[in-house]
Image 1 (tube, rainbow, N blue to C red):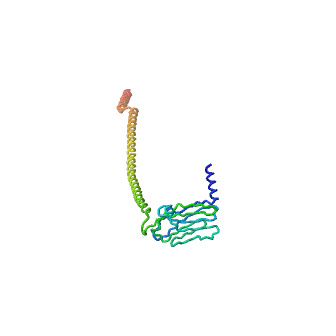
Image 2 (image 1 turned 90 degrees about the horizontal axis):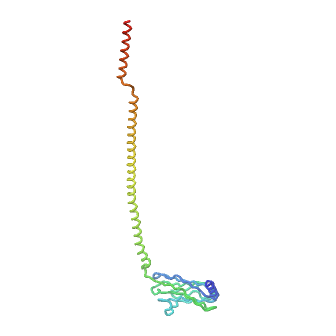
Length: 251
């Protein structure tokens, strides 16, 4: 519910001429002799006349109301001056934007710059920007932020280089170890293969010996009678033949 109420009040204020101011940048660093530019943009409703002032503060807003650098008045008919120049200070205003330009900056130009908008018609309203801190440095001086970033980047780069080198070194150590392990495993495989081959050869030798033994047994079992028995049989046959021949002669 409160969202709708806020939105309703926003529309009502816009219709009445309320303004919202956006100032850029918040911090501006320049070198002596450079030109500094600061801008303010505002949104407006039904506004007939608006006045813009640029103020400079040494430390913070409210300090003796600051120093008014320039003042511009703009009406819808556009007949009022929209640009003023005071020495090196130039103020310019368009439909809804104003730009402050500081030429040939010096150390004395450093400070806080704020744009202030005042709606005079139809209803008096005021609003200001968030301010811009202007820092003016000597020529040749470096930005402290760049120096700080350099101090941070250097050790970070060294750390990254160390990590990368150490990672490569570990990787190079792992490769010989891996190869050594592969060599050991390969030798173990060859050794196991040789043992298996020896076991197979021994088993074949035993089988051959057993087979030879059985063949010897079969040979002796199937061997014919010896020569002595054959000779005895032949002698007996000869004697029988002789006796028969003698008998025939006697007759």
